[in-house]
Structures are given as C-alpha cells and as structure tokens.
Length: 167
Image (cartoon, rainbow, N blue to C red; front, top):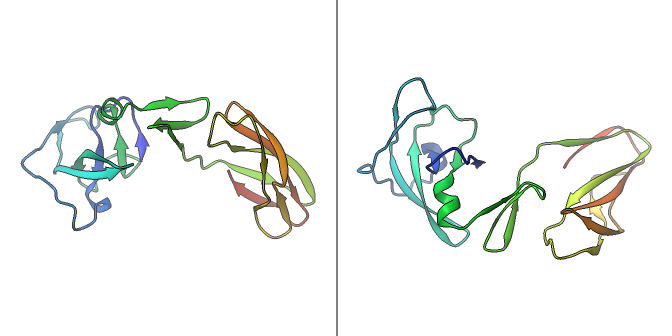
C-alpha cells in the first residue's frame, strides 16, 4: 500500500483482490487529477485490515499509480490514524506499521559498521537485541541498545565479502 494524504479515497487495483472478494459495481466514482482527463472506478469492495472493514474503490490494473493500492484520508479519518514521520510508521489502535523502506546498507568485506533497526514499542527506552540472522559470516545484534527516536543503533560485523543488507 502507498500512503497518500492527498487522496480522498482508498484505491486498489482489481488484480490485487482475490476472486471471492465481491465488487459492488453500482458505486462508481469519477476521478480527476491523476490523469489529464477523468477516469472511472470499477466499483467498491470491503476488505479486512487490522480487524476493521475498510472500503476500497477498485480501479483497473492499468490505473496510473506506482503502487497496487492507496490508503487515503478516508482511512485516516475513519480509523483515527497517526502518521509518525519521526518513527517512520503509521499508528492505529496503538499498533505501529512501519513504512517499507527499500534502503539498503552496504557493508564492505571485513568491516564493522553502525546501522539501526526500528523499535516497535516507543515506551521501551532500553533493551537487548538477540543475535539476528543477517547471513553467513555476518554478525548483527547480541547487544544492549537504547531507543533514540524509535531507532536502536547497533553494529553489524561482516567477516566475509561485500554485502548489502535490506534495512
């Protein structure tokens, strides 16, 4: 999903829906601002997200957006959502859903480098991170850390060849 505070509606591409999901084609919207002209939705479908029914406006697979679905202000208002840019997450019902970040950390061969991981509970100030599996000959975790604005900084040690770690 892509978060779009400029979109009034929640949108989802047709191919993302399972066959058993009912689409009500009686409710159709004309959308403007995305293309040069107007484009119509296919209908609406209700999906379960975090134990809530969420109404999505279904669009064709050719609809010109970078993601397969958009969560818009309709969702934020109805579900009392907070976007926490500092922690890089969306919070609803006290649960943090972290933004997908395709950022990778490059760790050269035979080096030690500092990186961070997200802290799921903002109330926890200090903690212990168990050893994390980052690949063969790569050591990450097994460290006491502090929560700094939703991030725990720790070292990653690479005793082998150059690697990229998806953060």
